[in-house]
Image (cartoon, rainbow, N blue to C red; front, side, top):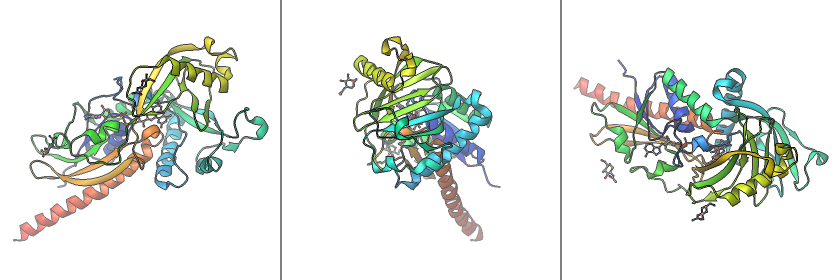
Length: 363
Ligand SMILES: Cc1cc2nc3c(=O)[nH]c(=O)nc-3n(C[C@H](O)[C@H](O)[C@H](O)COP(=O)(O)OP(=O)(O)OC[C@H]3O[C@@H](n4cnc5c(N)ncnc54)[C@H](O)[C@@H]3O)c2cc1C
Ligand SMILES: *[C@@H]1O[C@H](CO)[C@@H](O)[C@H](O)[C@H]1NC(C)=O
Ligand SMILES: *[C@@H]1O[C@H](CO)[C@@H](O)[C@H](O)[C@H]1NC(C)=O
């Protein structure tokens, strides 16, 4: 009789929780090993700090990233339809503006992915921007969504273990030697685990945002210029995220008041409704957010390899990390891809060992 394969997923961010849940649905026996779980707040745990809305950053020539984002959109859209309250996913109108747009920005690949996509006419555009689109998208309230994902995982029989992994072999060895598969979803720390060799990992990209109370804002705005990236993202709890900065390699967890002021000014300029045109002094500020985006050259690493445990057992090691500023909007698509690779390659490993079993039983 076939034993249910046992999986250790390292990481309980949006990527680890999503991947672990899909693996459970596929019938695997899954335990998440992580230092941080939903509810924890740490600069080393990116997921609670995200915006987080769907606004793809996948380039026009990258079909893999496009598929991750498009597949994820469909799932968020369905969840918003039937589980909006518990998941904290909202359907909202989006306004997307560009100054000095690139060729990709002039020709968005994703216009058929989101409902209601329309290019804005010149007279609908705010001054200072060259091009703009409106469409319908989803905005996710991270803490609520992460807790919901975790509760789905647990309800399906998933197990959790609070532990820090310093070497991949730590995740391979249990006394009974029963682990078959490891999935590395450790975000920006993924390549710091001994045994993970990745020359493409970048320094994380620091983002500082401001949280304000403004429950009348029920749309998201994004303005991209060559120098700046400004956004306004509402959350299900009546707060709104104003952003952002991208500072590669800076891991400071301290908010910079000058940056916060600049963000509030940019946000109020592009979304005067925040304070009914009365400027940043009228903002009802809740606090600052600082998160580190897990950047990787060439995009997220979603692949598998075979490693040997200290006791000599072949272990399938899958990776799903390095999602930079797209971890939410790529989560389901990226996890689906990882699970597909795991199924295929684990079948191959199992076929190899059953061939040997067959051979030995004939001798
Ligand atoms: C300011 C900001 C705004 C953003 N906005 C958006 C947005 O609008 N839309 C969007 O899609 N994305 C957005 N993102 C990006 C998104 O937040 C990330 O891509 C995503 O959270 C990454 O998730 P993850 O699960 O890979 O990593 P994490 O959330 O960092 O999770 C990593 C997990 O691995 C565990 N771990 C790490 N190392 C070890 C170890 N050695 N041993 C044990 N456990 C370990 C951690 O404890 C944690 O559980 C934003 C990010 C920031 C910072
Ligand atoms: C990680 O574990 C492997 C196998 O036990 C070992 O060979 C290697 O030295 C370990 N790395 C570190 C840095 O401890
Ligand atoms: C990192 O960013 C913070 C906040 O802006 C700033 O105060 C600090 O000087 C930066 N550190 C480095 C090394 O650039």
